[in-house]
Image (tube, rainbow, N blue to C red; front, top):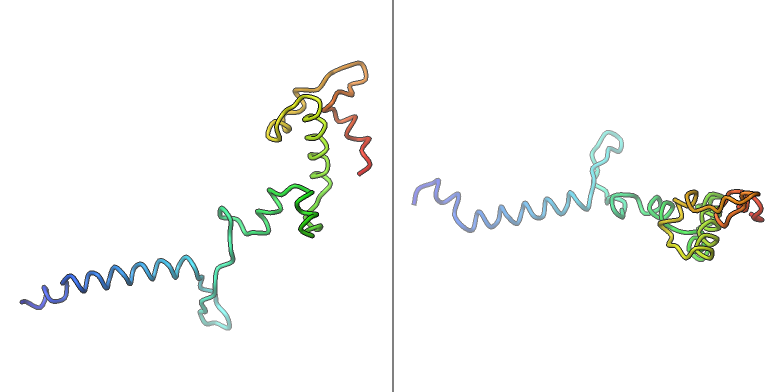
Length: 127
């Protein structure tokens, strides 16, 4: 067997394939940072759909879930307004949460403009 054939035999290719798999796994699991001018390998922070876990929770959780899990620092007044708007629209019209953002189109424009989804009724909320 010639020298080139020995180098690229089936066992060598299998070792290379395994090395590439391990390299890809390490790149996914770890990141390289610099500390005191030297490269260090540290675990990557956990992510959900490419976002850090805390940011994902802050964007997608509702106030009730945040309160139940003790994450009060993420609760904002806008969350309360959206939850109140959802409850009023759902009670009045039987719509889903994804349709609440289009609530302005569904207001009952009466004389006082205080339909089930109007901002006038949201201003009277205690929070």
